[in-house]
Length: 333
Image (cartoon, rainbow, N blue to C red; front, side, top):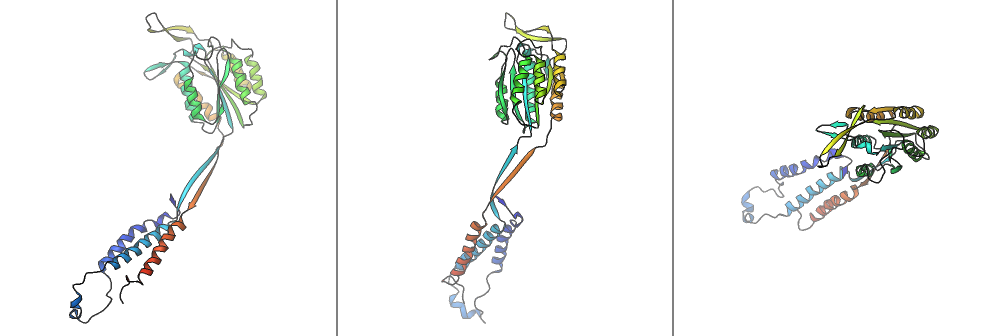
């Protein structure tokens, strides 16, 4: 409930105060006598409460009328949010090399896939009005989540993804991943169509060459931002020894930066190298700033006025009080 004139509500506090002051003054006399000896025989009569009852009705009616004048109403607001005009498909590498733990967060190491997922979630939170989809790839590429504004569902599905499940992680099909992502944007009519491609390897699987997929993206007006994930040099790959203890072995990092740079350059995007935690977070911050559009939001507010419902009992109390004053409850004379 809201009020059209809430500044009138403080007057309700004055009603009991006025009633108390009125009662303290007492009622004006109905008869004036020259001597109290004339009315001594009736001094033992009990005082009628009829006057108090009628006065209470009048004060209550006044309070109801003030409440009605404050214009109470039931308010229901609806906000219609239109997509900002930016459609984004994220292509996330799920090859086995993405479990390399070359990122550090306070107190522990984090593998490439979990780091990419964490940073992606923060990016999603900053883009509430964008439709975002997800393509995952390794030896094959498939659509994990179509373009959607339901970001809660998107994040929940992202949390369910695990390397080594539902996808062959022995190879990396960058061309297939980019082609699948671009196909999701082929028929959409957006102001801006973007693919964010994250990988830590080279294209060694799939039937589509990265250059061919980049040409298709360029023809369809899709801008591609590419991110090379992982430190430079050698990366620590975790494994379990015969006693079940976690160990690490180093293997060379082999990111095809030239191909990723060519894809980004050809489509009007940009290539980034995420070789540490801070840099990874900064990259998504930069992409977020580069791809901003005006939000189109329409807000509707519906009011159901309660003035008539409130004023009616107030007027009813006034009329009832007037009628009762002309019955046995009337004040003499």
